[in-house]
Image 1 (spheres, rainbow, N blue to C red):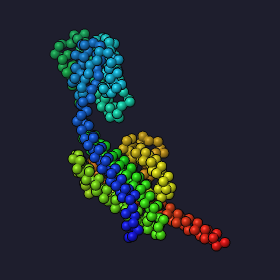
Image 2 (image 1 turned 90 degrees about the horizontal axis):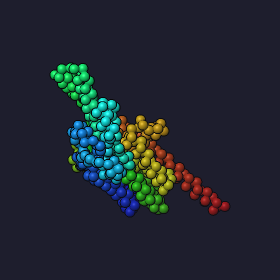
Image 3 (image 1 turned 60 degrees about the vertical axis):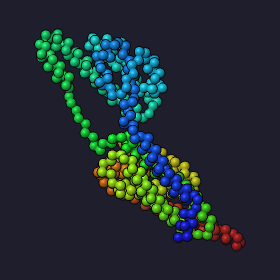
Image 4 (image 1 turned 60 degrees about the horizontal axis):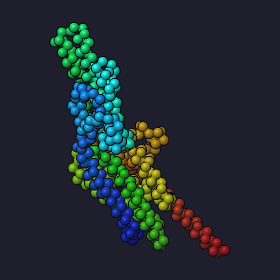
Length: 385
């Protein structure tokens, strides 16, 4: 008990616990509040349109096809300059050739310009616009061509109108979305939780290692120090997991039957798996272990499946994802917050990760203690000689 008390009273230990809490608070508060109005504000985006003939703009009636602001340009260079500076998100160019082909029923080509050096979300905004505008122009072209053909065949006006009405109605479609996520803030939560949890655990492990190192010079058992470290990790995981749950609960986001208790339990287990994994490399390699933890941070963001599905990764990273706890943490967060699915499999894998880290830590500590005993015996035998 005295060893545990000494460890807790270390300044670096208090900093370690504070760092873990700080990352949860900062990431939670900043990310959730900054992304809370993204979906409501997407209509502020501006699309640039260039139509070299006024009649094309009037015929196509783009205002009914685009939900965003439209800025009409007379010169392509001016529009490209605004696109380059991200004042507009896309350019739709109906050139003179397009207008000529539209009038003569030839194949028409719409020219779209986008800036790839932009936010990742911009592509998801402009892609539906391109599809919608292209479909609208294609439909207009089809109706126009069909009307001319039917007129050349001297079809009665009534039949012509009925045929065009059938073509205009087209094929309807409905989209059923499973586990709909309403806001961008909600979409970002799994990434925020994984990132803040691992970075916080990584920094906490660094300071806790300093606390243990400073106390190891005192006459106490090394095993007691590391058991105390484990207890600090366990208690911190429970408390910080509770705080994380309250952050999500107070965010007022719409989750599907969000269970606070399930999230608290799952987050605490996930945090503990991160803490032990990051602690392992610091115990094994001391401060050099931070370099490995930084590598693990990037690797887990890639392999967790939050940014890119694991299916799209190389075979190496697909295999690696099965051994890293962030994969199961991300999957569990999605299930708890957005579905009614159970997370039994994810919890099992996280507990396996905890067990493997514990075993590895015990082996490393045992090896270090034995190595120190061998060195001390060697020194004593040398001094005896």
